[in-house]
Each structure stands twice: as structure tokens, then as C-alpha cells.
Length: 396
Image 1 (cartoon, rainbow, N blue to C red):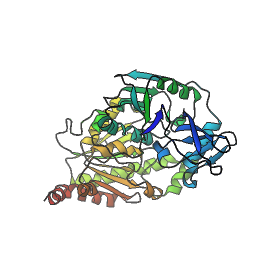
Image 2 (image 1 turned 90 degrees about the vertical axis):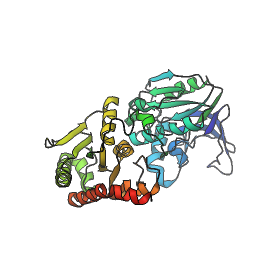
Image 3 (image 1 turned 60 degrees about the vertical axis):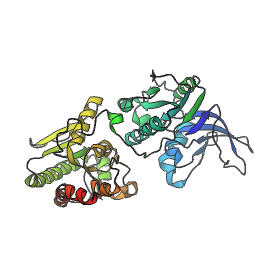
Image 4 (image 1 turned 90 degrees about the horizontal axis):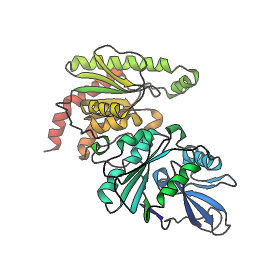
């Protein structure tokens, strides 16, 4: 945790000479929590990120007057330049923020989960479990965008729901910053959660209110997690061209055929299992024997229903991405189809619920997206058939 009131816990060398940055006030930029500073040598006004969220992995410093940006080259494009753009071109729109108070607290930890990517927001929210378990002398205040409000766990002191779509999560809204700053005046001591980007989670049901075994008599499904925008197709250059040329329906059709072929092969081996497609996007139709649970828009009720589907699944399969987070938290075995350019992000889309590292190696698997439906079918068959024998060997 980082103290931000009454004192701001911040030490950083100035990018100008040998000076230091003197913290003045907190700025709630949106996905970044920043601190306005003054260079001790040049007296220049600089805005730096606090070590929270993706700011905990890399330091970003912006001079809003000269548009200078100081950060690692590796993250300049993804995080640095959008931060610079947001601070030098603030949005004047009024952002609605709803305050819910559940229990009184004068000393609080604020968990800021605002982001422009769904997976980032969800993963930051999962930090709430650690604070609720280990920081009980502080009330927990969660800042969350409206689409994730349903996952805020019980036990928090307050929820501040920001009505801001993902696409605008990178923007800086001074009106929102002022609203958060005003609410902070009610507290005598404030810490900022580090909001780790990939926290461990002991119990996912704390967030979804769906027990991993609630109503599950047996795991008897094999489920493919569908994405309209990231299909099961091995050539990333073709996908990039397809997005530009409006050819994505063709790649989604190819994905559908591959899923049907995969399920047909598995059905010969496991005729009594249910075969399900779930996820975002309803392009195309499947044979009636495939349970089509895809939707165009998610609601809390739909999300919870799908969590039960995942909990009934022996195996969930899907292309690497945030779409795999909740499925991986519930299914027995997760098979993650990895695009070539995503190997550096391996396991970042998995919510591990297995504590035994030996069993985790069996239950969470990462394979090239180029894997054919035939080879993947054999891979799934092996995993399902050998599951109990492997567990038996590991517990001896």
C-alpha cells in the first residue's frame, strides 16, 4: 500500500539533473493514479505515476507544459504515450460517479480498478481479496467501472462506481478527479492499493457469488470460449489484414468449422458429454447438439450463468485473452491457445485455483494456436482420460 493522505509517500529522482520530485497533490487520471510534483532544482511541474496498477511495473513522468515523456521505451507505446496524450488533452465531459457506503471507516485503502481493457480491470479488482483478508483495520474503498460493479465483493466499506466505458478508460477527466478528491476529504488516513496486475486469488466465488461446485453434480462438459475479434486462426498477419479489409466473418466461419470438427472427434470418444460454445459474439450457427451459450452483451445474470457452465466443464478451450479469466477459474482443465506474439504474456489470462503446483501443470495448459482440431482433440482426450490417474500418482 502507498500512503497518499495526510502525506504522500513518494520518492523519485527528477529527470532534470540531480534534483528530486517533491509531491504536491494526487491526480486521479483514470487508469493511472498520479502525483503532481515539483522538481527541486528547476521548479518545473511534472506529473508522475504512483506505483499502482501498471504504474507499479514501470515509472511514467510527464511534463504537461512541454509534452515531454519519461518512461521505458518498451512501454512507451502502450502506456506512456496514451498517458501523455490524456494529461495534455484532458476531457471536459462530466463523468457520473455513484457512491455506495456500507460501513463507516476513517482509515481506508482505495483500490482503483479503472482501465481501458476488461482483463486489466478485472485483475486489479481481484486485489480486493488480499485487502479484505489482511488489512482489516482499514476500510476498503473500490473505484470500479459500472460493468464490473457486480463483481465487487461483500465486506468493502464503499464502492465508487464510475460510469465510464472501457474505450474511455485511458482518458483524463478533471471532473472525475475532483469528485474523487472531494470524497477523499472524509477520511483521516488514506492508502492506495498497489493493485497488482496479476494477483493470486484464493476464492473466486468471493467476487462472482458462484461457488465453484454450486449445483454441479459432475463435470460433464467440454466448452470452447468464443471471441469474434480473436478467432482460432494461426496466421496473425492474415487476421490483421482481415480486420482492415472487413474479412473477419470469414475467419469466424473457419473458427466455427474447426470447433465443430473438434467436438465431433471428441463426441466419438465421449458421447455422453455436453459440448458448449460460450463467449462474446453470436456470428454463425452451430448444430443443435452443440449448446450455444454465446451472447452479444453480458449482464451480471448472464455472467453468473456462464460461471456455472464453466464449473460444469471438464475442459475449457479458448484463444489467449481476458475471455479465459473466469472460465479458467472454474473449469477443471484449461487449454489456452497461444498466438505466436502472445507467448510473452503466458498465464496472464488464467485465474489459478489449484494450489498444488504439480496438479497445476496438468490442469492449466498452453499450446500454439496453430494446433489443428485433430491434434487438439487428441490432446483433450488425453487430458480427460488421464486426469484421475495423474491426481492419484501425485497424492501418493
